Length: 135
Image 1 (tube, rainbow, N blue to C red):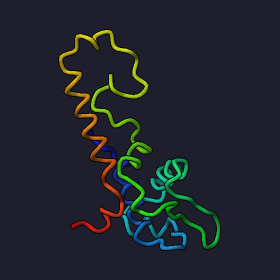
Image 2: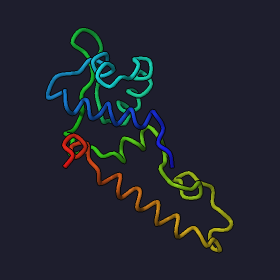
Image 3: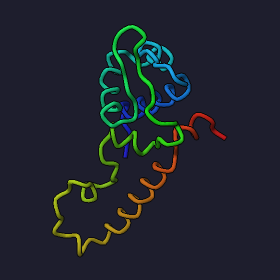
Image 4: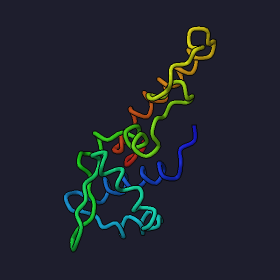
């Protein structure tokens, strides 16, 4: 599994908003400058985060983006699912996979299934708050 630039940048954006948007909206230009992400690329990432309910935005003077929930309630798993899709390590475990004719005889499926569970459990256990204040 390789996390794309889109997923990695989305994490940076959410952390930035968590650190800078106590109650105010943060302009996209400010996020782009601090995170060294082009505005054009941010325009592709932010809609997924808005539609996923993690951030909200307003246009115009004083507009920008802010989190919809505290950083303690947002996980890395949520963000990566919005930007990357299914995080399963093999195609047969994705939520929209066709039924495999070899499932009953597959010697490796239990291993992949356990890896899938470990990945999900780990990423769903890491919050944005924990990334803001690493120990």
